[in-house]
Image (cartoon, rainbow, N blue to C red):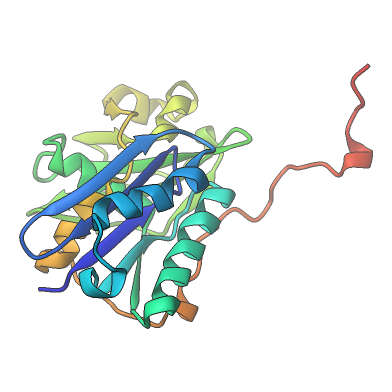
Length: 234
């Protein structure tokens, strides 16, 4: 079994873990906008004095969607570590990682429809639909970025579980979602869960060279204003 170092900083959670064939050593903190200050400290803690080259076979990284800055932190750290030791990388979807975190916490039952979300700010959310079947997440459609009220809906919703920070927009979501959903808005990706699932083969590893790792931004039309267009505050 490969020894997997997993990390994700795409959400408000900064999460990093090492699976070493027998156990998971993990660090997890919900501290928005501070990931760059914590992730390398977490790495030193889980390595516990070992050299990276002696402890890790592959680096798994959450590639989003999520915070623009957070994605850059995770991908740059993963690439830098991989290049320094000539290690392969594996990118995983942050929204899917949230589903596995929820399952590990006993929040999903077999056959449930799952809407996994992340707050994309500017009154939008990142979302992915799928169904939890036989211990696996089966996506239905691609990752989308959408205003809550315009979220595309699958044909069948019941039973429905709504995960992640995008649930903050619950009152703006279509009524069919609001009426049916069991909501767990504090669920975030958990690197310990991902490291173990990938290390034991419960999820398939797809090793690639570090240069191929790329953030999944999804968001294209961001409503930022140039400085000259902003109203000055008096």
